[in-house]
Length: 259
Image (cartoon, rainbow, N blue to C red):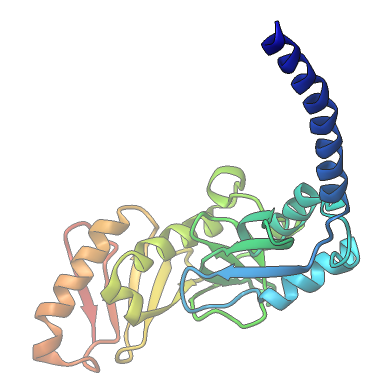
C-alpha cells in the first residue's frame, strides 16, 4: 500500500515538472537567434561564375538581415529556392546548425561552351544543356561557338534544358559538339572554337597550326573525332602543324586535307 502511495506521489510531482520543463525548452528554442549567415561554394572546376559574396548579397537583399532573428522564423526553404533560381546554380542546400548558424551550400553549374550569334548576343550552356546568361563574375575558359545563327528565341527563356526543350538545331548541335570535345582530354586542350559557316557546316578551330577541321554536320561526332585523333597521331609528326590548311572529316571513313 505504501509503495502504491509513493508511486502516485512521484507521478503527481513529475508530470507537472516535465511539462513545465518542456515549455521552458520550447520557449528558449523559439527565442534562440541566428548568429550568422554563411555561404559555402562548391565549384566543378577552375571557373568561378558566381561568388559566395554575390550569393550572400542576393539573399540579404531579398530577405533582409538574418543575423539576430529567431531561428524559428528563418524562411529556410524560401532562401534555398531563391538561391537555386540563380541560373549559375545547379543545386542549393540551406540549413541551420546547432550553434545557430544559417548555412547555404551552393553548387555551381559547369559551363562547357559560350555561344555568340551573328549579332553578337551571347550566352553559356552548362554540361546539362542549360542556358546561362553571359553575366558571370569571371568569364569561364570554355569553347566558343559562333557563326551564322541567332540566339533571339533562346534568350527569351531562362534555365531550360536545350537538348529537350529547344527546337533550334544550331544550338543543339553546338552543345553536342562541345560535350564531345569536353569528354576527350586531348581535344579539350586543343580545340578553342566551333564555327557554323555559310554552308551550314561546322568547323573546329584549334590552337595548333593554321588549319581548321571541317566536321560537316553534327552526326557521327565520336567517329569523326576518332579519325581526327588518328590523323594527328600519325600525320602531324611527319608533316608538322603548319602543313595543312583544312582537315575535312565530313566524308565517311576519310580524312581529306587541303594544303
